[in-house]
Length: 103
Image (cartoon, rainbow, N blue to C red; front, side):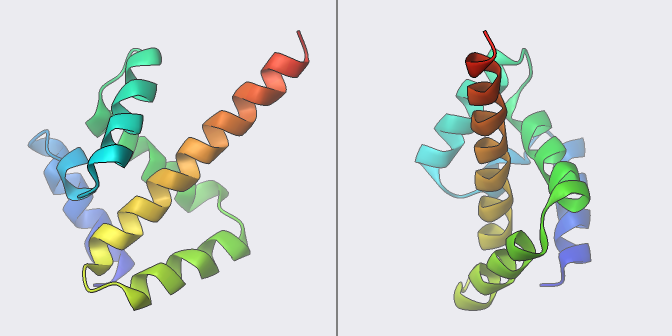
């Protein structure tokens, strides 16, 4: 699956309110739901925003890791989306810990 195909699939699923279901990982989905609730959002919106954030802010190393996951997994779309969501959750934790240190 090409990245453009995945992004198109995410957009289509977003229109139906089913983006989070594409993750295919219940523990990860639970983390997404918790963070989304803290932000006053929903899991689908969080996942869609995570994809956009990754497109704009991921480092070259993040992209290499993503491609490695995609190449090793039978469900390349799911692997891609899981890596992106994990990256976004890590970014959120990192920014939260930086915010906590400045208090």
